[in-house]
Length: 428
Image (cartoon, rainbow, N blue to C red; front, side, top):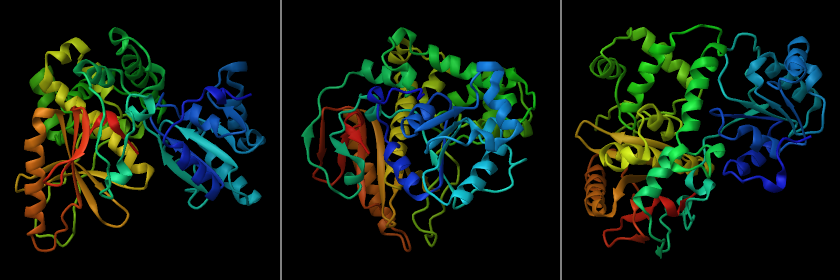
């Protein structure tokens, strides 16, 4: 029996990708952070399912998988195997069964962590296609009208339209609530309960289960709070160490920080934004620091105890959290049409908040601003950066310039060619 009532399912952007992957692979593995909706979405696309973590009958499903993984593979296809990483040998069993059957759309695997490769003999290349799922974008949660398509915008096509007024309190709520399906509709006063519970679940359970190593929960929390203070920045590991000393008056070993960051990455807790280079022949030296992000800005808010009321009176902090939310959405939308998102920063002090690179090699530059009063300055800076990059030998300038904003009531193209789009009007 399916865990999701298909008539009540709230559609996700990744749905179309899952259908495409099922048509082309024998199995699909949907990866992403806990509680982002992987199981519900995968169940929607499956015709039978087995939940490895089901506690019924003393975790009978897990015991069966450990004894003989092939025992759990029989069922109507596509068959969902949820949280396969709990028994890593399932991966090879699925890969073998896909080879034996020689058919597409046999299995859907879900995973909320990347396990050690110990016990896994084959990568699954060519048999198992991997998809990344994230928390809900504003369009998926119903908080964006979707009047503007990012894919069409990146082609230089957008119709101007009035998009409606957006209040600061609404934007703050969207950030603090996050994109967790289980958090939709909660009151602003209770919005941080789920992100707090998420962090506790990670530290109390998942961190050790990922590889059996017991780690210092207090030090991990110190590092998480430092990451929250440096959300949406390119802070290095050294900067994180200094930040912990400055704000917490404690210290962590450099190697420990690197180890913990690796664990957080494997748990899909952090989702950094990679640096971009428009052309490897460019004479411009680019900075290679990743922009720090949690998988959802609600986690940073929870770690900083940044309630809606506190953020309302601290717009500087909220500006970083708003940018993080926009970049989460841009990444979700861009990946749906096989584009990639980066950030740009060079040694001439030129920065672009978000860069979307298209399949054809063109790229688009996005600045993110909370208030409409910041649009003119942001647009001017984008034009200046584009023109200066165009003047450099070997460099390819952006083909589209856009300011993504919060408190604006219209989507339009300015006389200088820069597009302006409210985040609450955007979709994939």
